[in-house]
Image 1 (cartoon, each protein chain N blue to C red):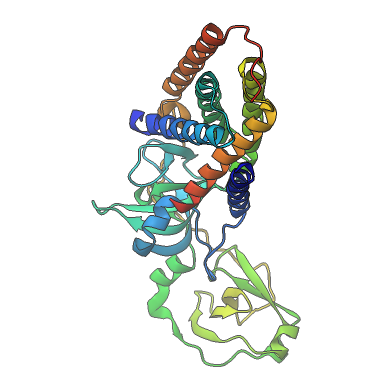
Image 2: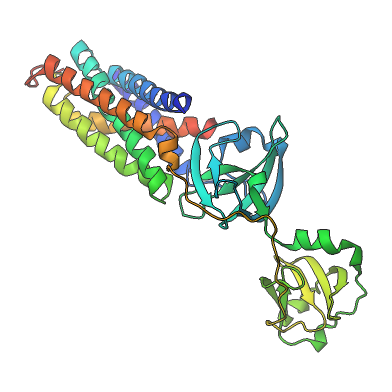
Length: 115
Length: 270
């Protein structure tokens, strides 16, 4: 079972952090502390989001996408709040959070569709 | 430069939006519905279409559906006696047969179950296995003019399941083509339709409109009493370890943010 859990957590977290860091650089964030903040904020939200989705998927009989969307919304809000409070160079923290999460969420869906 | 970057980001976001839309498109077979399952898509050539109903009959009193035949990740449990609908069967390297089933709870989840832990529900296939030697070629005796407006189509002679109805007005287009016939123990004549306007099954030529024909009760051997598993699939998959790891990572992250960023306010504007 451990062989199934660690890849689930690791791949999701690793991919999310990579995509959001790249997105941060693309949109012009160069302040190193803010780039580290993106990493830490995703460490905070991604495992929790994966865990919530995992538990809800087992115990609630609903379409998978319907479960993912409210979880992602909660992650977007939490990340936005952290960026607003702690980021030095992210001018629009909630817009950044929404865009970064759409990118990571959508990329995950594309990869799921391909593989 | 900024406009170029913006258009790149926009292109990626559009792709992500399309990916979300794609998730609503799940039927891509011509006629046969295919499951959205990564293992099935990888092994499609090695899967046989069955589309058959079974009863769960596991030794422990329940049957577990797994993520795929090569995984120990439990997806759901079915207590013995519950219906399990199998669309395709895959045989693994050790010769065990696995069937893929979709859960009828609106979740669109799939799982793989061992066929050995299921009992096939008595259906048209089972009836043919038992009575094939008694089938004779269709003799052309069906007379649509002597029937009423509605003809009942049964799963098999003696079944309680009606698979469809034929209406007299449909015969104006073309008549049903019967494949073979069978005479039951009470002398009733039956004929089988492979396909007619989306319907297939058996018509009782002796009494085609009767919806209350006698039902033959099927006795199943080797039924194992149902019982609930001790632990849920989530717990068996290591839920507590998962929770521990996630909580640990969250706490460490919160502490690190608090320590290194403290009560920092936004000072830099780029």
